[in-house]
Image (tube, rainbow, N blue to C red; front, side, top):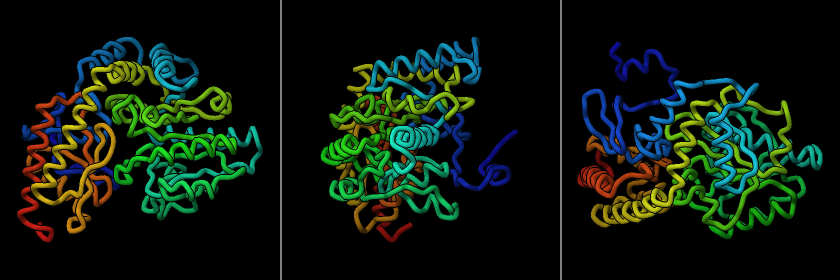
Amino acid sequence: MQVTRKTFDEVMVPNYAPSDIIPVRGQGSRLWDQQGREFLDLACGIAVTGLGHCHPKLVDALTEQANKLWHLSNVMTNEPALKLASRLVELTFADRVFFCNSGAEANEAAFKLARKHASSKCGAHKNQIISFFNAFHGRTLFTVSVGGQAKYTQGFEPLPGGITHLPYNDVEALRAAVGEQTCAIVLEPMQGEGGLTPATPEFIRAARELCDRFNALLIFDEVQTGNGRSGTLYAYEQFGVVPDVLTTAKGIGGGFPLGAMLAKADAAASLAFGTHGSTYGGNALACAVGLASIEEIASPSLLANVNARSEQLREGILASARRHGLFSGVRGMGLLLGAPLVDAWKGRAKDIVNAGMRHGVWTLVAGPDVLRLAPPLNITEADLAEGLRRLDLAVAELAAAGPGGG
């Protein structure tokens, strides 16, 4: 059967608007579509394929496990799940791990844990979850409610209650809102959908101090910043602050659906037998790939490449800004960087993505005013240079037409 973009409109629910391009093969940092056109991938399927496409160690892990055991459910457990959980405990602050299939499910588990922990320890009155405007935590009803973007909740009311949204990086607003009723503060160390805005050290420290004072859980959503993307295995390492709970997905499976909630033992104990679950969570295939992925990402050489390529990418964006005047600068961490648009070009980030595709490079947006770049963590200096060259051609094309051009 030959499929086209038209096929999508005929058979799929219309909640997406995918590109006309249909990739059919990938290798490393490159993709090829149905017509054989090549693209440099500076998007990684929204920061997921962190080791590029078809990484040989991930392919080997999947193939080996596929010939052993695929699925059991959590009536039993399996070796790959226990091995991956043990490795995550060794590499992080966590004592316990809960596996699921996505970032939304990891956050759903974390939010349920926060409510259950507070209820068990202090009573039902302690149920306030504090989150932040422009946050993104997933697309389930609970996670869009905790996320701070009204566009994702409109039409789905009534929403779960007990959630307070505050300005991100506003220490005074945070201090004013937290009290004995607070069960958790939930934050991204760097807001992804919110425009690649990193937290300030003062903000992170204040959140930790307030959680300690009021016996609340500090939850870090590292679905996008985790798994080497920020330049360390998890971004919390760069702030000198340890959360009670951390959620991860995207890059942990290198493209195989996998998510996890990591927690300290005291908090984890509140999710006692029967309180939460997932049929697919801890799937043997996913965890085998996840272990291979984490071992590769945690290597010092890989993380060194992330930081070296981050500097190269920053310099390339700033050089483009000087040449063409579309970007006002660059911000972010590691290989998750944003290029905010100058006032005259605000609202046109998607136009840059589309122009990039015409020139053979795939990028993303982080809202309408910020271009997002999330290349493979192991991308070579040469491939990144080529990706920047193609992106610069796209930006030059738009600049020549001017802000009012097509």
